[in-house]
Length: 364
Image (cartoon, rainbow, N blue to C red):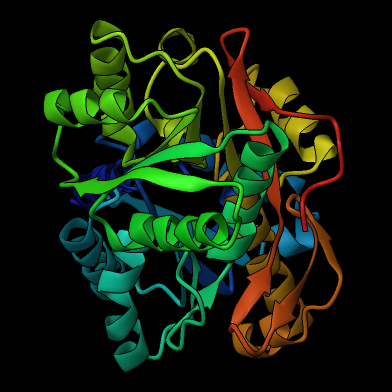
């Protein structure tokens, strides 16, 4: 009878471990804190989520042995979707009994934030363009920091007539509004087209035809990941061949970079800064470069582990961060924004790869 019970428990344990996505090393079993991480492993942003997962595993392996013993990590698929993220969080709270939560993406963060406040669970989120959050710590740059390098590159190239097309998603529209302000305050530039579409728009026939009529110097395509290839395909079919600003690192979740480069041969966009050292180590380990958000998730895991090892609460440790050196470079906590202030990096799709636009210091 004992053997039967033991076998049943073992099988159940293996089933639960498999549902979490990876088998936790034995060293983590006695962890004194449990970190839950929700990110997209399915859907249009799955490749961003898988890159983040690799960064998380790398962060755990890079911890000193004593710190590694003090943290256990479980993760769930949030699909870059609010309701799906809420379901994942409820499972983590009720079954996994997490102590701290990390979320990849703004839609899931905004859906879960009120719940974690009520449950008194600290939340560190990679929530693009959500400025001054009250309910969680945002580990991301401001909409201004994200948009300014895009505007500066557009100005540097001497483009005057700008066409701006955006998805009707809060985080995307925040970037649109910031870019609008930069362009409207520049007397040498004008917005010849400025419209928005639903995030499920995939045809773009009408929009491309109207943009073409305005004869812009550059197109700013400010979309959700799944929309870039349909827009680029339609633009190519209708003979709209213009330099394209792809706005944010979400384009790295849009598909094969070779396909994207074929559709947008002259392109640039911004992502959160990642150090050359982190990028090199990630590349050597996985034989692919890290995508947008990977460095952020790496640093979140390391911060939670170090906070636990220090004996301080997550709140105290995060709020005391000053000139922290991590995968995202050097950053500090901003009490005004309730965020960890990071920088932007200008990138491009070239040679079939997502790569740094210029070998320069990151933009302030």
